[in-house]
Every structure is written in structure tokens, then in C-alpha cells.
Length: 176
Image (cartoon, rainbow, N blue to C red; front, top):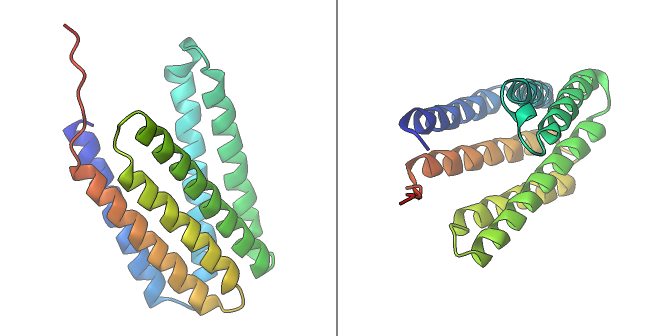
């Protein structure tokens, strides 16, 4: 990671902490804020993947996967933005599914990194934390305040992992 990327990752961690603080202060509209954050983040990720495809990935082997992922994320962003008026249970299931999928992917990456003697502990902790957030979302799906608190804890946890990873040394491969 370059210094600029490290600064960007650290700043995104700080923004996540700020979002958690705003969410704790305004618990009444917590699920609305969560839905907005999810919709905007998915929309931005989809745009980033599509721009990456248009600028670089279309010349790479398997580059169309970036286009498909971008369109998929953009579609999920639009879908999430339409769920403002839907039932709370749909939003909770959507949020729990997103955390469970993210945790599973992180655990699989950690398993692969452990197999190849890489950095795997931080990824495994991140995956376990995301799966725990998904389970707590499903257990406490009746109370909006508890769900907002769980989401805030997940945001603080993700921000901490992101900020820690910005200080972690990366391996540089030299070609001789």
C-alpha cells in the first residue's frame, strides 16, 4: 500500500467512526440511516468497479468480472435505496445477509492466506466479527434500538480493523 492509500484507508476508518457516533446520537431514525449508508456505499462501490473496468480491467484477462460485479453492486445499491418504506424485517435480513457474506469471504481469505503462510489473523478476526454481527442482528431483530447499537458496534469494529490495517507493513516483492 502506498502512503496515499494508507492515509485514505485511515480516513475512511475515521469516517466510519463518525458515522457510528452520529448513529448513536440519533437512535430514532437509526434504521433509516443504516439503509442510507448501505445504499450509498453499494452505489459508490458499483461506480468504482465500473470505472475500473472502463479504465483498466477491460484489457485484462477476466476483466469482465469487474464489470459484472460493478453492475451487480450498483443494482444492489438501487435496490437498497428503494427499501426505505419497506418493513424493518427486510432491512434487518438484508443487513444480516450482507455481514454474513462479508464474514464468510474474510474467513475463506484467511484460510487461504494461512495455507500460503501469509497474514491471516486480522482477516480471520474480521470475518468472525462480521458473522457475529449478523447473528446478533437476527437474534435481536425485534428492537430497533438494540439493532442500531449492534450496527454501531460493527461500524466501530470495522473502523478499528481498517485503521489497524493502514499501519500494517506490507510485503514488497523485488524482482532481481
